[in-house]
Image (cartoon, rainbow, N blue to C red):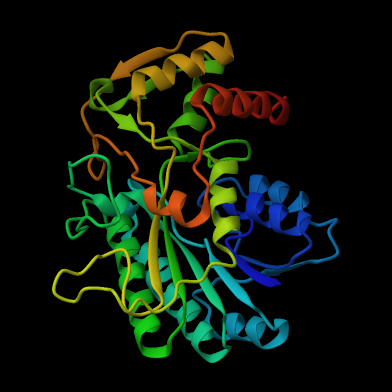
Length: 334
């Protein structure tokens, strides 16, 4: 199949592209290579892909309507996987317009091209952040997610609403994936595990928010990629049994579906730091601070739908996953 991956120079995008190329798919990659974090890291991810003759790369911003349309006109795309987004909860407080440009306007351009170029399946990244003020655990896709606590989360919930509209109006099969705290080699430098690793190695103090009283459902990148891969040829279909009087938010009468992809095993922040210290071989200096605006205290994914529909459940332990990340970090940064 010819698969368009937006955000292909990103953390998940590069790993996913390699998986698809190794399985003999053609990958059309799109990325604007913005400077939100180190562009060299993004180019090094792309270097993992350039030797594949079935990889076609375009440096294009999905918010650029005409340039994106030109790619769809040239490349005869079968499936679209939209991973391009302005990421980061805290950054959305400082620079909100970047989130509207990429996550709303950019996603609108993706939907319009899917509409006009007969795309067989649109898979797009949502986020565990959409659960916002919810406290019932584990988070389920059947829960209401109407109370976001960051603009980033609000844009991701908006993506789900926009996708449903296009599934309803134009019969486009759309699958939204709520990722839970993804980590691993070639990860994002703005994520806590990455900055903690750097600061512990350099002997700097790490900032531990909410006095360490936080939990996250850490999910290794290979498990995220495997989940996406298994959903590739499972586009949602019309559901005649969907109940309009008691609507399930994760599905629809239209060809629309939402999944959580998480490890289904929340870990405390202090246990996470302890595991990182073990693999680095050094104890962190810690500064305990209050909760930051936009953060949530805990995340925990119910993955029953993913397991039932694909036969796959993420299973990489935090110990193994962080071990792989630290090995990569030591090699990459010498």
